[in-house]
Length: 233
Figure 1 (tube, rainbow, N blue to C red):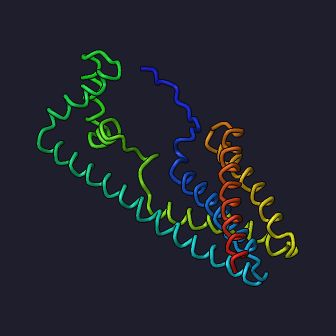
Figure 2 (cartoon, one colour):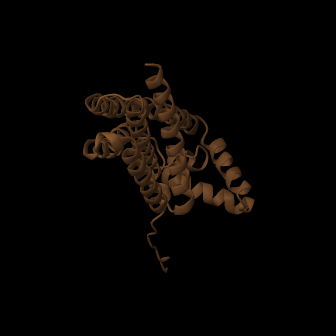
């Protein structure tokens, strides 16, 4: 009996968990820290105060991202575990009904009833819970929630992203800090958008314009607020 050839393909879907957290963290780090620095500088704060605000934004933002990601993804993980536990109980109580349910899913996807019944039988004979988790619940190894991974990735990527505008503020002369940080941050955001699109297999142009636009909008708004408070002060 001949064996079917097998091969491995690299798909972007396996990266969605850590990629989403990394891109979100780095983007938020650049935008929030750059906006904070630009806003404080626009209020005519002293150079020391500008740097302190940037460092505080980096530390607070990294901790906030880690906590937020962990809580959010943990909730998703808890839901997945509850659904799998419920499915395990249903398989133990009524395997025949679960077999029919799985076969019905395959019929809806285009298989003939006879083939769907046989496919469901073979898959359940190998890994009944895995088959139902994947095809009924939409839970797979590639997309399952990983709270700790998401939290660490978000915190690290936020810190790296926030460090870029902070470094630009450190090396910039005080009179030009707003323009230096804004320009450097837009460049960082454009590069980040292109890298994220490349890793995720999406169009780089669209991603680059999207992140740069919203970053510019955030910095412009905070600069305006800083200028307003500086004038009032």
